[in-house]
Length: 74
Image 1 (tube, rainbow, N blue to C red):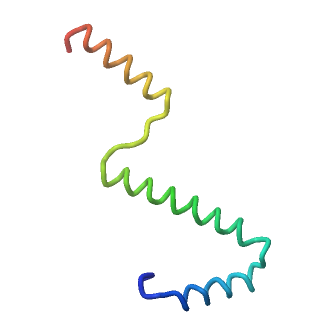
Image 2: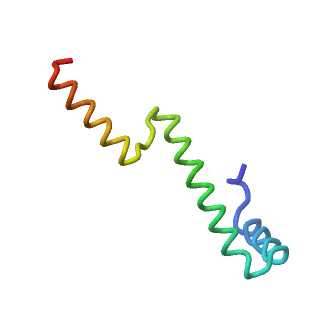
């Protein structure tokens, strides 16, 4: 869908965005779009790979469970 835009189309979109939002709002909108895209890619990768990123507390808990399992022979 976006692969057919090309350079002239991209410039046109940027000029329209500049006119609508103004130069002071464009960096904020760009940051918000970038962080949204990053979150989307992260969620997509997690779904595809079947793994989720664990918080440090979850990692510590998992290590403790794995150590207790190895001690009990389970």
